Length: 475
Image (cartoon, rainbow, N blue to C red; front, side, top):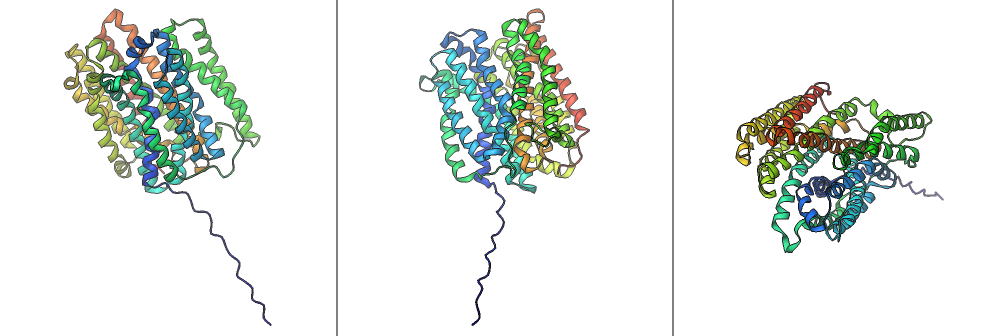
């Protein structure tokens, strides 16, 4: 009797997670929320101060508390997503962002609002790194290029749209909510995002998860706090002794962080920020470019809002709409970015810097000639060129930074990139904002604005020169 042997069942290898159109829309929707909230509160601060009887220093904390928590926890958020699952952390971070936004909108006093903003920043740090990491791990080839381009477009638009939306919501005073609407608007968006994400965002994680690097986490947090806390709070506090001591401590803390991470890497452990990550030429050079670009951009957004409202006498809506052409041009040009990069390579970034520089130069000329009659018409030519130039830089720089990062390290790579950008955004507001406000009493609003715009033009020149060192093609 012949024994029949059943054939062995061979299990096919696990399919690579794929991010579809609905999933991509969902993560891009989530990506817009933290960046919008970084800028949306600027135009609402005067109303918040009057309603909650808050001093200028407390209002500074409403902005700084969010930015600090956001910046110092981004890399940790990326590592935890790699470790426990990016979809899980994305959903949890988004839900927490909605709850903390609700807490901000219902805050009965200023200090409650500050605490809610810190928690909101921490929630954003849990959610945002998972977005880029998911795109990196669940897309490939042309789909990844398109997704990264759309992510960059979303990021750039969010930073401009936040200021516009803030002015519109405060002026609309929906159901008597006033400034609270700038936070409450997040809640329905989060609910829709959670419903979509539960169905359309795939789970990805590192194949070889490592425990969290405790010493590295503590030292990175201390380093960023030592740099960003005095820069964001120093001006309003009058630059007391602690701000200078903190700035002096920063390079020593940063050196200690690098030494700890390097030793962990040599011992075969996985540090929070692996030094070997910076061996990637595209990542290293892209990160260096993000610094001057983000410093100049965030400083411009802060200064132009103050100048148009306090100097030119525009209300929050008209001041926001003066930047609308920049947002519209950014949207359309950024959509063409992937095709331009395919044809001309990273020299597109250099061309973008030239266009942005021309736009900022035209804005400075308009301020010099037309002040104080400065509005949509006067700023239109400069806004068009600046918006187009920014669209040819930011989305492409994002792609460059992550182009060589392996999917298993996507979380830490995106966390490092977002931390660099967030720190530069805070630095730009502090540096260019301080320059502008210090010049106003002696030189007047017009001259202060022109000098600050020319300073931003210097940041653009640096970005353009650095772009010449980028790899000609993006992997």
